[in-house]
Length: 184
Image 1 (cartoon, rainbow, N blue to C red):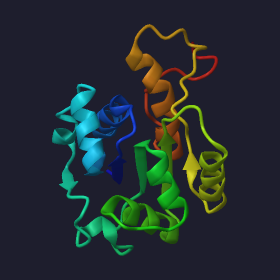
Image 2 (image 1 turned 135 degrees about the horizontal axis):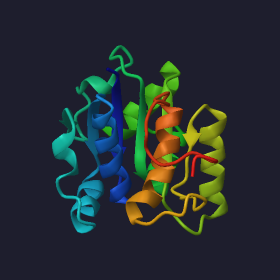
Image 3 (image 1 turned 120 degrees about the horizontal axis):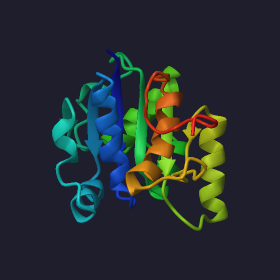
């Protein structure tokens, strides 16, 4: 069993966070969760008020004494999903002013997988520049852009095309989430 950190911001797309937590739990992984205040509100507004209940541990975003704020706390990586452009900008520039951004900064300094799933459109050149900065420092950008080659039948099928890539980049390639190219 591995240990993963999931951060949820106020960007639209709570379904991505909810399903990722479920997939990680289905893969027998330990999930540590931190939500921004707006992340909590968006989860409730979009119909996922119980997303946090499946996590093994949930942290207050103001708790800098939480284990995930330290590089000595071992885990396999972090996913910020959905990731607002404000949070992405803070992470890209090392602004650890909340537990979520501090935990992401820890991933960067410890060379652990840090995946952000931005959910914004259109993107300004500043948004794109911040993504490039983060990618240049080792962050992995997986936009919430679903694929259609497998002929998805439900919204969950669409969401899972993105989450399959997230799981792959966490090293959990044995999953059965979504269909791979030519497996359709």
